Length: 180
View 1: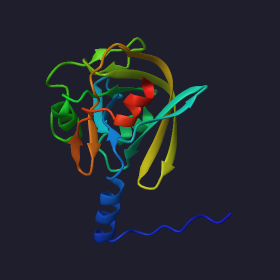
View 2: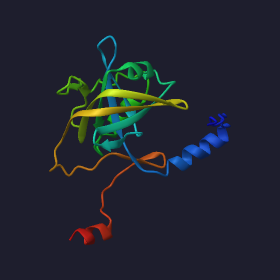
View 3: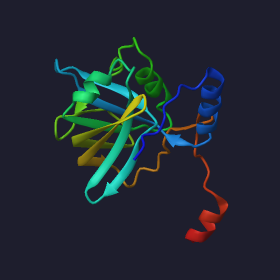
View 4: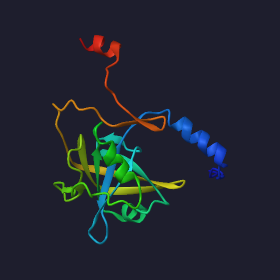
């Protein structure tokens, strides 16, 4: 089997691709882990998704140029905190390098010891990570070892679409009628 040829996109093509990919709405999460020195680290991602229910697997992607790449590439476990619609500032803080990302409050340890964010809409603790190189990123797949969320919480998630944060403040008309 031939491997696909790799080529670098020119800047105009890259902007066009990024803009087209931005037409897919995504939720926002913060992935966390412990550094080899025992310090909690975290970064904002919108590349989080479920992979399998049996076994329970989720994934996120981390860029090779990220300053946190070495930590996530070697971590034995990681956490995922799904952000609420009112946590835009949290998303920004964990997205920018050079900030004390945990300045607004220390992370809390999950049941497995993985650092998690306080006030998340849902949180997952994952172990047994598998790393798959994919272009300039690694896809990191983990087994969900613990999770928490409040099924009665009606707070909306933080959503990213077309380069900006969005809100899911209304239900689709047909969905409301169909459910009734």
